[in-house]
Amino acid sequence: MPAATLKTADFVLHKVAQSFGLCLLGFILKGFYEILEAMGMASMNSSGESLKLCVFDLRRGQNEGQELDKILFFYPPDVTFSTQLSVIGLSEGLITFTRLFSPEAACEVIEAERHSHVFHEAEPDIWMVMVVEKNKEIEAIWRVDALQKVLKEVHSLFVMFHGSIRSLLDKEPSGGLIRSHFYPFITDYLNDLSVGKKLQLPSFRETLKERGTVQMLTLARDAALEVQSLVGVLDSCAGTLRCHSVILFHDLLVSTTLSPDDTVDLFTFSVMRLTSNALSSGTSSWSYLRKGTSLSQTSSKSTSPQLLVSSDSLPSGNGHDAGRVIRPLQHNKWIKGKDGFLVTDIWGKDATPTIWLHQRQERVHLLAYQHKCLTLVLLVPTEAIVNGELDISFVKHQVIENATAKILKVEEKLSKGWGGENAYHVSGYRYLLVDNDMEVSRASPSGKVATLAKETLLAVNKLRETVDTEKSRTKEEKDMEICIRAKNNAWAIARVTRGKELYMALEKASDTLLDATDSVQSFSNRYCNGTFSMD
Image 1 (tube, rainbow, N blue to C red):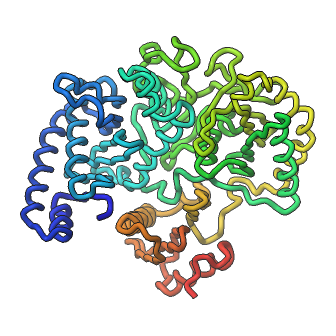
Image 2: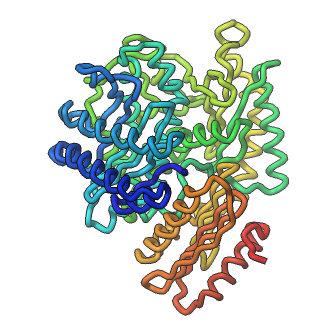
């Protein structure tokens, strides 16, 4: 049985009865679910917050009087412990119960009358749960998969900087160490999603975006050869020890020598804090913003740490300094030095930032160099520095000495071929392309997507929900095509094949279904090498 996705109590009743042929079991589950919701939601509503986010460990706090030990993080942090335990107890109950029917994969989402509960098992028995209050406002329509990817992204970024949650718990079993990491880290992450005093979760307006992927820059042949030559020089900047590198132009990926997973994490962080756009705006140009919300508005309001808790009250403790909290997602903490390298005091004065590479299971120093809109991230193994084989200043000198001319040439070629923010706009189309295997996506520019009618965006959001549901029902990849006619007569079309997905919105009201599918076919042949053609 696939992972339990519970839309309503009636849906659960139907699916359980269908799968097991036991109608009585369905009624028991329905009653159990209603009791748990009644127990948990009364406390939740009293806090006045429309969103709860918690992280807890099922292996902890199982004895009476030790229940608080399982709480590793809770937002908002100022609610009572009884409310926190109610929310986590409800979540734990749902996880435990659904595991009776799906032992290998418990629930992913619970849709209650007043709340949506979104689950993500970040690590074995360590759960992240987001509870979102349902709102009659049209803007509060979201897609569950998009909310799950927020949780996945938080965890992936956390592990890149601090290592796995379980390893920190094993290092300091009382939980003080992991909490001292979690609270400031998730604080700073959530501040990126804030506008004023409210958190803006991904809504239907961001349905033609895909979190957890990278956006690539298309290179001409001569530019690609120059980039390849530059990467070769960067790889050898540490002598016989190979360095890894990631190169970005504006907020697009140019080159990477990392695995897809590590590339996504480092790309996400770079666009949030390191690229020229991030440094100039003081905020993440990647942030999922509402239509009509400016970057400057978000920047001025999202940098305030009081969203969750004041910085003075954050618990201390990190591997670098027992009395210092390392907060890698803080705003306005990176500046460009005279030598072109980006510097920060987040890790301490004169300390070099470090991250963890998941695939190589290796901690590396992060060196970021910037020339105009070109950002280079060089990763040097920390083991070589610790053993005295290398010195960071030597590596920097090697970059300046051997790579400067090539950096200038690459930036010049990329700038000449740069088509601006609308470089990947295709007239008449609003689209999203996703390659799940390579973890790469390409989409219509946000400004162009913003011209779509609300009815069209809602139809595309519904379309994506349908695809998400179909994908969750089977572990095997299958080809599919789904078409939805919006209330304004626009067409929303999805084609899925061999790990690749295409979503498209066409607002020409006079188009028939045949016209719309012909348009998709034409797009596929011209821009996707026929990948999504139905011939």
